[in-house]
Every structure is written in C-alpha cells, then in structure tokens.
Length: 481
Ligand code: IFM
Image (tube, rainbow, N blue to C red; front, side):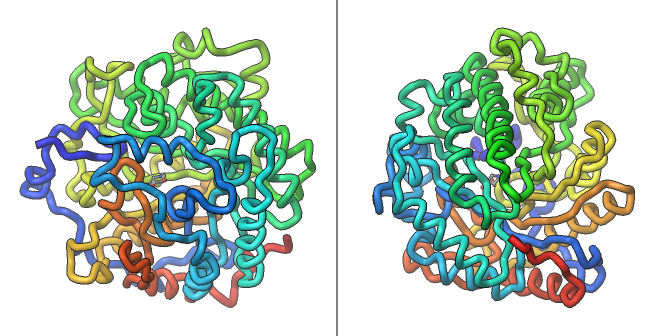
C-alpha cells in the first residue's frame, strides 16, 4: 500500500507498519500552560490561507485560480475534495474572527486571494474582492487583533498560469505589481506584510512532481518556478518599500533540518542536495545574495543580471514554518535524484505520517540564527494533523496539545540560546482544505463540520487560550496600526 503523504510523500513504509512499530501520537501528555513562559512581548497567533478556508469561489467577481482548475480535474485530490466551499469563511468571517478573539489570540496570519482581487491576473481590479478584505481587517481591528497579511499562499490566477505561471519570468513582475496594489490599498491598517508562503513547496509540488496545482512535472519547471518566486518576492519587497508601507515587511519559508534516511553515500549526497534546495535556495539568496554551491548550476541559466541583487533584500521579519525534519533518500525517479525517504529516528508520527520531532525546531532556528545574521524570526506555522473520526467527536485532541507544547518548549530553548524568536502561530485556526489531501486531515484548533459548517472549539483551543491568558496582563503586543 502506498500512503498518500502530502509533502513527505515517499515515506517508504506503509502507515500500518509505522503504527505497529512506532507510536502514533495521540496520547502524549500535554505540558501545562503555566510551565511555558515567553515573556510579555511574545506574539501568539494562528494562521490560515485564503483558498483553504474562504470558499465562495464564484462569488462577487472572483476569477479562477490554479487550485480551482486543478481540484476539478480528476485524480488530483483525495476524495475529489476542493475549496469551492471549504469553511465558507467568506460568509462566516465575523464569527470566525470572534472565535479567534474568544481565545484571546491577538495575532492572525491570513492570505489574500489574488484571483479575488485581480480576477484576470492583470491590472483590472475587483472592488468587491477588496471590500471583503476591508471588512476582514476592520473586524480584526475591532477585536484588537493584529493582521499579518500574506500576499501569496499558492493561489495564482489561472490567467497567469495560462501564460506559463511561475515558469514564466514575467510572473515575478506581476506579483510585484499585485503586492504594490494590495499594500497601497491596505497600507495603514496592516502591521505585518509577508510576501510568500513556502516558495519551495509551491515550486517542488506545483512545478516539480505535479502533486499540487498547477500539476506540472520536471526539473526545469521546478527550478524555474523557484527562481521566479524568489525574484517575485524580491521585487515585491522593493515595491512595498517604495510605497513606504508603515508596517514590517517579511516572508514565510518552510525551514526544516534535512537528514539522510541511511548512512549510505547515495542518501547522504541526496540529502545535501535536498537541503540546498529546501532551505538553502530560499534563505541564501534572500540573506546572502547567492544560491548554494550545490545548486548554482541548476539556477545559472535562469539568473539574469541583477536577479540576485533584486532577490537579496533586507526583511524585517522571517516566518519559519516547521513541522518535522525531512528524511531524504536517493531516488532516481525524482527530477533531482532525491526525495522523502524513511525516518529511522522518530518514534512518533501524526496520522499523516509526518514524524514528530520537536527538537528539530530548535535545530533549524539555531541554524538560521547562526548562518544568516540573526534575523528576527517568528514561527509562522506549526501544527498537528488528525482525522475527524479518529476519536469520537474529534474535539478530544490531546495529541495536538502535546505537539504544540513540545514544540513551544524547544522554541523557548532556542530563545534561551540567543535566537531572536518573537512569536509562534499555530497552523491552523480551524480545520480546512488540505491541498491534495482534500478534507482528509485537519489541523484546526477549531473543528469544522464540512456538512453543516458548524464550528466547535477543540480541547486544544481552550488549552491555547489558557496559555495566552497566562501571559496576559503583561502583553504590549496590540498594534498601533
Ligand atoms: O496546510 C498547509 C499550509 O497551507 C502550508 N504549510 C503546511 C500546511 C499543512 O500541510
């Protein structure tokens, strides 16, 4: 049996084997909120993304995005799932924000949908799309919640995909125009701007192995997409600086330590290459202005004069998405000869098959701090997947609480070791559409019944609220914007 993992796809062992030999993490004992102290300024938050929660894909002038097309083609998504309705957040937004506020959460990272704002991927504005995010941001401010606005979380307008999408260098310039227009519109009301979410995942899964929209495969498209995402990010940062946005400017990358699956020379070489792509090809050009040596040849034909200068931009804050270490093996069928392999280190896994390795967050934070000049970092995503029917109502999610508290302990250790980590955002605010896995796995602090769309807070929601409450009274985190 081949288990359909999302990002760590090629784990060689079937889930049953894993479950039999190593514990699935459902029963670890959670840490009490009182033992986790982060000081008065630490920002606790939750994250989401537009396509995963909004629904209303045909409403109020929204145009088609690559995920609308991809999800409706047969064979791409588990059980034919799609984001047509998702959580129907588009219509239930005020109640959702009230739920965030109800847990005392003061920071919310969300993304705006490019196809909702510019349905044709060109300069033609959809005012009703802007009106939705106007309402959302107003609602956040009304609840004293700081907006962390991510400009691009994988939902490219289909019109731009028709011109090659991220394999087309021109898309970088289009992203910069989009970023400029959005930042101009919301400039005084957004405290934190994040340009991209996980460029590597979009490039590898969308343009390398075809598991994500737009479903392209191959080595050339993989590297082209990654370079153009990096370039679009650099041009966008410059556009926001030119607009003099008063908020802070940053981006979000998935950064995870990479290990060879075995000690063999082939796996070791594969892991080094994969690390150079997954972590290095995003962080090094951004912070140092060059690609890692191991992949310089791959990027060379794509790099025009000034590209690396344009990518090498100062940012105010880096969002790090961390879920687990990546265990990599040599794989001749993969475009770069390396892919996810078995993990012989972890003792616990989520239902998705992702290893639970909380100490890995310390390792990657320390690595970024030591390698890239001590940037300010926040954990922009970290979370635990479960299935709705795994345990009764699905509200009894002690495994999620243990996962979050274990990771927070290692984030704290990183801070104690001198790493500048200023916040932690749980993925995710509520159960949502999980890309090629459809509605199979859920990361939310809040359960969503996808038939009735009723929201119900899980135990982890109340646990997180307690954690935040235990820091309250000392917090100065509310934004002046
Ligand atoms: O749901 C995704 C999110 O969109 C990006 N980071 C990983 C999450 C869990 O797979």
